[in-house]
Length: 553
Ligand code: NOJ
Image 1 (spheres, rainbow, N blue to C red):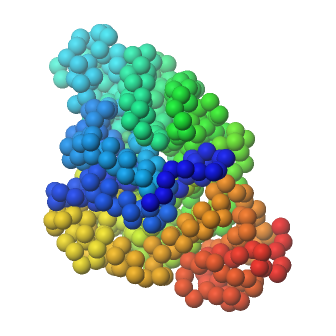
Image 2 (image 1 turned 90 degrees about the vertical axis):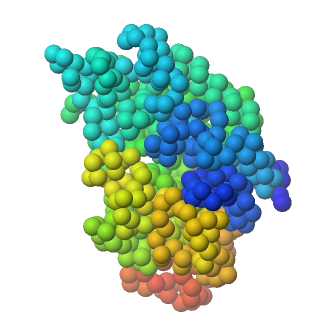
Image 3 (image 1 turned 90 degrees about the horizontal axis):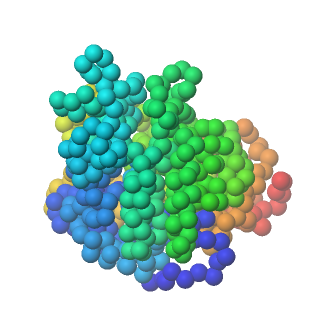
């Protein structure tokens, strides 16, 4: 076991190699078909062998689980489905003993409708102090039968729900069970200070801030108009997004976090554009990182990735913040699936038997090439459980198994995110592929997951798991995360060539093979790429730069 000691001068989070754990689907220890803390603790050795240096746990707090725990009913405890606070403490301690830090998910934009704050607000009279914790407003129309404004929920339908038998409605930007808190109320700010302290005192190393750009709403909750709003695949702009006032909250939190040693806060600020607005979240007195969703959602192609990488390195650099690269998460279709679609990198909300099916091998080839590009980039990196196995989505799950509120709130028009939340295949031949000691699994696993099982990949030096281990080891040894990127002239416009320190990458986004310069191959996305040979399409190679004859900057 290694200890959390370091000789480095850069804070650990600047090149943090973080592994996202969606606890429901990682490992089940008690056979109920839902993952839990003991299951995670039992797999820490696997994570240490992978070489990551932190984990991010998506919400594990008491919750009715209307949105996989993003509907919190008590911020300072653990849902029994995942274990107890003691189990959490054990996980934290054992993770630290492996040199793995623990980031938890803070959900400040909304609470569950079962949270005592909301129950108290519902029981209180309109206009009361209790109702001020949320956004209650009288409905419009003669009988208050219309919502107070025209905002729509991100999960479909109106963003307002009426209190039965009353004039008043309350705001929920996500599902009807996730009620938006009123961050203009100082009592809400005080309550969250206490929540932060509760977990920081317990020893967590960081917080991922859910829906970080939503907390503050425009004064008066004005209607959405063409002038004040843009909703596209790239940008969410409107009176409920990215209001300037949100930065007061992050400055306040940073002051608090700075009273502890070395903790990190990461913003989930989805589709904040232009990038100068995203940069505001990572100014030196606010949060330290913001996920790079442009990178995660990019379409396949040399020009796309190069433009995004340059844009982020330059802009994050203006405030000396590290970039936070990500290619998969519990919210988006897995990278190996997206890159196997006819439009590679398309971003469907989900896939099922009525939609296009990906080319699984092509998607995997590209995902393996892309991780080689991602791993050479300076900054922090967030991997999503199963990504290291090259897992695809479940693309044919029957609707009767679905759990994502997006599916229900949109009346089935959005397939939802269940396909990327399938329990992990640990063992090819065990029931539930080793996810659970029983044969239970809260979402069904596709048969094809047997071929991706970790125990098979452990034994195969060309497996995706072996590739990830190798890249992580090289990234760590060569300190690529705190290095810098330099592009080389590319021989073709579907190829990128770059270096970071003594490592050089060639990545071929096209189909035509590329002649490689002589040089020692230190990692390859496909077996068989060797010195002096060609780089096939949809693949990548790392070469030891010092040993290459002609490199041109
Ligand atoms: C972002 C989370 O990642 C997602 O899973 C959740 O549904 C929403 N925020 C609402 O909390």
